[in-house]
Amino acid sequence: MAKLLEKPEEIRVTANTSGVPLTLCRHGTGEEVTAIYEQWKVADQWWGKDIERCYFRVKTSRGLVCDIYHETGTNSWYLSRIHD
Image (cartoon, rainbow, N blue to C red; front, side, top):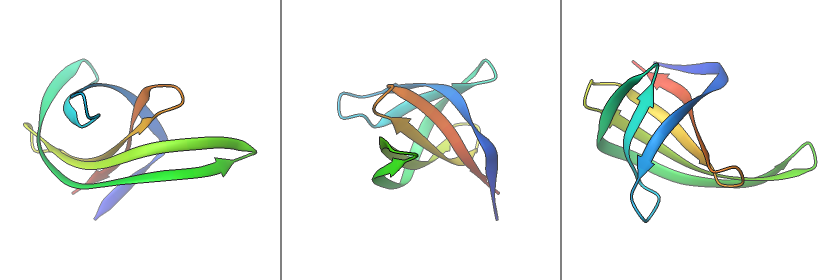
């Protein structure tokens, strides 16, 4: 089962030169990304504004399985869904 967050949570991510996440930090706690299960891109318009996001379903060193995305227009990272 997965929990979609009502509002995506901004997080800090360290990524490699290809944009693949290596670490993430939320609530002041850093975690290594130990697995990437899926990766996909979304390019669309939202309220007349172009958006481009790169999504990743990852597992962290603390066992968290979640969906995160990189908002390429703002260079920001967000946590959008947590999986049980």
